[in-house]
Image (cartoon, rainbow, N blue to C red; front, side, top):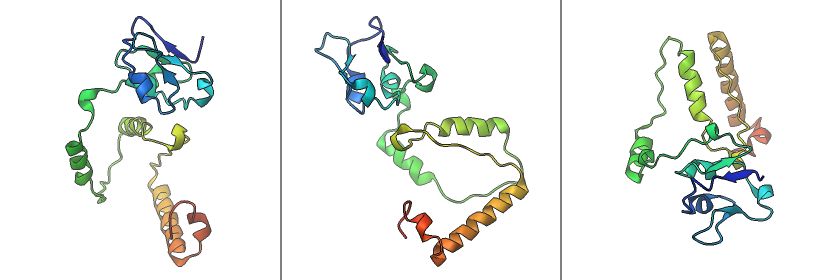
Length: 166
């Protein structure tokens, strides 16, 4: 049994999974066939789960990507161009903080949402650290300000170069 399982009773042979696979390792021999992985496809798989997520019939499962990690793409919730522009234009970099702690449940939910943000090669090697202690937050802020001052002064160019033009 391969790494990608296709439930033939659910598959509609619509080739959505094949068309959406970023490495093109899923193919249909003809319009009446069930999708299959090309030879050597397992080595080329990014393990992104996109094929599982885009199948509206729930016909695919991946041995290395749990189904819970691949929520279905709901077409009625996809932003159109006008909605995306409005969303991005309405965001501002201004922050007005309250002297009130954010509930732990809200922070956990935001981290859960953020984990779906794209990462290079879908590696998702991102760790989140939540700091609730005000003294630690102030110390971290001071460190960031000091680092930026060093960047502006040219003292940490070696650290910055791979990440941003100076």
